[in-house]
Image 1 (spheres, rainbow, N blue to C red):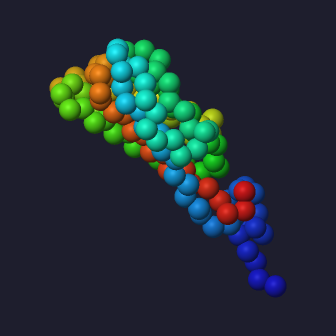
Image 2: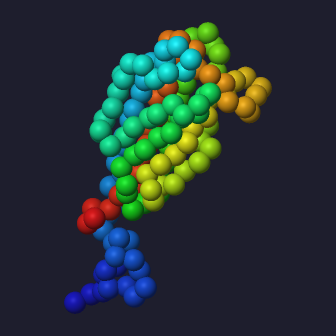
Length: 129
């Protein structure tokens, strides 16, 4: 019988099996004062987005044993905001913090009415977990 990855000493149990990337999405239309008003997309109820202050949003997503990649997109017709950046990530806990920023500014800028915020989380999972 040949050795497998499961037989390798010192390897965590979750490091075996095949990789199965999982993707979660959530998107909102923005209302007054940066409020998340209309849910446009939510691929899993375990992914949530909450406004916590001026241009700052907390993200929760399903726990996975692998690294999470997060992409945040801002659609701003005015345009009032240039992008959303990741300011904190804890892929073990399934949490992240995003900040929307303006053109030429690193400080948080409020999204305007009718702007859209779309977040995609790609998490690396294992086939045997």
